[in-house]
Structure formats: C-alpha cells, structure tokens
Image 1 (spheres, rainbow, N blue to C red):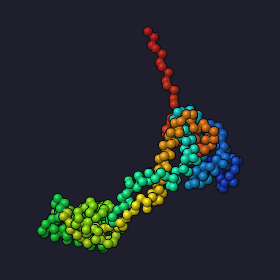
Image 2 (tube, rainbow, N blue to C red; image 1 turned 135 degrees about the vertical axis):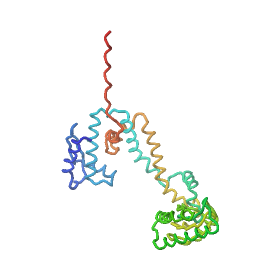
Image 3 (cartoon, rainbow, N blue to C red; image 1 turned 90 degrees about the horizontal axis):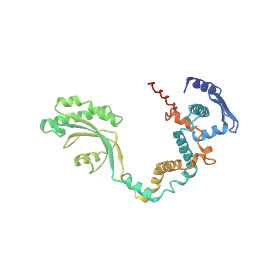
Image 4 (tube, rainbow, N blue to C red; image 1 turned 30 degrees about the vertical axis):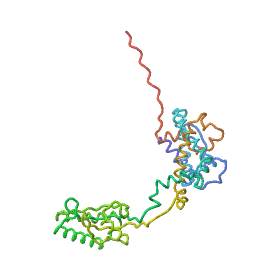
Length: 327
C-alpha cells in the first residue's frame, strides 16, 4: 500500500470510534480515497465483528477501510474482471452458502458410522494398547556400541554411577536437559575408550522395540522425572528418565465412539466443506450471482484479498510492434 494510503488510514483511525454506537444502518466512517468515496456502515461492521470475534471494533474498522482502499486500487488497475478474481469470488460465495446450509448437517451425531469406524481402525493403537512408557536414556557404551568387557566394563559402570550422582545433585527439569547433562560427560568417556549416547526413547511398550533386558528394567521404574540407577544391557550401562507412564487402555469401538465423533468431526467437516465448495465454485451460472448470496459473503472485497496476497498484478498492454524497416 502507498504511503499516501497509509497516511489516510492513520488519519481516519485517529478519528475512529472511542466507543461504538449501537449497531444500526447508520454510517460509522466515510472515507474519501484516491479513487472515490465509500462508507462503512454499522451493520457491516457488526457482521465483520461476528465473523472475527478476536478483533476489537477499532481493529475491525481498520480492516474494512484497508480492504476498501485496496479494492479501489485493484479496480483502478483493471483487476476487477480478472478470471482469478472471479474464481476467488465464486469460492467465497460457495463458502458463505455452505456455512449456513452444510455445516449444521455435519455434526458429531450425524457423522456416518462407517466413517467413524474407519477412524477407529486407523487409530486403534490410541484406544487399545498395553501399558506404555515414554522417556530418554543415557547409555555408557564401549567400542561398536556394545557393552565392554573386563576392566573397561567396570569403568563404564563407574562412569554411569558418576553421571547419575551428578543428575541427582542437579536434577534436570526436562528430557532435553537430561540428555544435555549426560552428553556433558562425552570427553571423559572418550578419554577412557568409552562413548556416551544420550537419546530419546519415544513411547514404547514391553516386548516392543527394545531388547528384553532393557525393557524389563525400564518397566521396573515406578516414578517419572527421576534418573534410574544404572543397569546393564548388551549395549552398555543405561540411566533412564521416564517422562510419562501411560496406563493400559482397552477401549472398544462402542466405548470410544462418542469420543471419536467429537475428535474427528471438525476435520471431516473441513474436508467435506472444501470439496463441496470447489464443486459449487465451478458451477454455472456462478453462485456469486445468485440472489442473496452476495450479502452472505464475509465483507472483505475479494479483489482486495487477491491483491494483498500478491496473487494478481496489474496487466500492462504489450509493447507496440516496430514498423517494418524500409527497403
């Protein structure tokens, strides 16, 4: 937007509402811009505020003035009849119509059961799982990421005990801090021919992704947020910090159905809305020309939105061809 338009907006908003009058059909602001005069009426401002409750009345008025000035610039640039602007109008008209006719029919109670069952099967692990653990570990390991033997194994155990003592003296407040604290001993480990692995374990079950001896020890831990005593596996010496112990859950479809419907209806409705909106927007005659539809559209001039997003640029006429050279 040009500096002149910014100056105009600043002057208008300086005179804008200290407090809004009762919403009615009277003008709230009359603007004389570079391309003519326009009026923002109270009922339009009210409609915009209902669509955008996060905006204050002052911000909403700023938006509407801004949009109108951009729209005027777009029309002056010859963009009003651009096919992409017309397509944006069709999409907005379709969305406005669907908001009143489609959304109320796609409620949690009215979702087809087959769709809900499909979601249950895709997310069965959320509703039906054994006890789970989530956390991180610090591993003191030897060459080849294996538990060392003999004196080197004794050194690995001693270093693991030293790391745990440091963790207990200055308890880490998060999994990230736990891993950072373990990695701080890397140089000391390397000096002894050992290595430190400070890693997230993610969420895991017993008899799942990790070695049995590791899982047995991890599932014997009863609290969260406290470094475990070092314990061995075939890979070395571990210190585990649990972030969460997730109880076993055995929920059938019938038991989970209400929760599933509530969880998925917003996304299902959004996808269906987009599909139907695209189909309606491509219909003939254009839905935006249907009686009453224009009044439903969110009061943001569509060509202004296109310009603001950088979708369109003024079309310049092609240069005239040079006359042929004289023989």
